[in-house]
Amino acid sequence: MKYLRFLSISIIFLVTACGGAPAPAAAPAPQQPPAAQEPKVVVVVVTQESAPDSAALAFVEAPTADEAPNTTGCSNSARLEDENPPFGAKVKAGQDFKKTWTLTNTGTCTWDSSYRLVFVSGEQMAALSQVQPLVKNTIPPGSSLTVYITMRAPAESGQYTGNWRWVTGSSDNVVSVDVGNGSLTDAISVAITVP
Image (cartoon, rainbow, N blue to C red):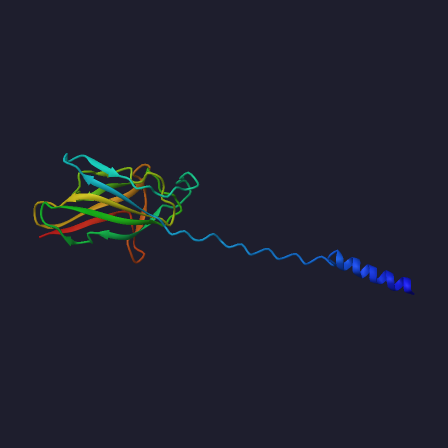
């Protein structure tokens, strides 16, 4: 009996000294989803120089994408976030002004340096009929791009509108632009009034 008691106490002591039953495995910490990144805005400046048919582009680094841009099988769309001067603004005759459009890439295509603005109709008011390249790297979906073009108001009073398309590759590959209230168009406009 003493032997059983001694054996029982020894086993209990041994089990306790060795840590007893294994501790339950700690549940792995839940993984946090990656923090959402703020959309990046890229500003591109196009200015008219002294020669009426020349332009200079100033580049600001665009966010780089992990994948090479591919427009095959993806959708090309944008949303007009802002424009300045606003539609129908008054501009003095012969005055230079800077037209800006801020576009957000709402499609699934990544915008690259093949994307450009092409003049399509109306009053051009700029030395260029085509602005390319607009981006140095890429603009992934969800990011924004602000484009500036220096223009000159016509010399005579009246209302003037010029229409530009945001295109890639051949000018046939047009980006659809939501200009507000879900209205899609294939051109963005410059509309001014010369008093």
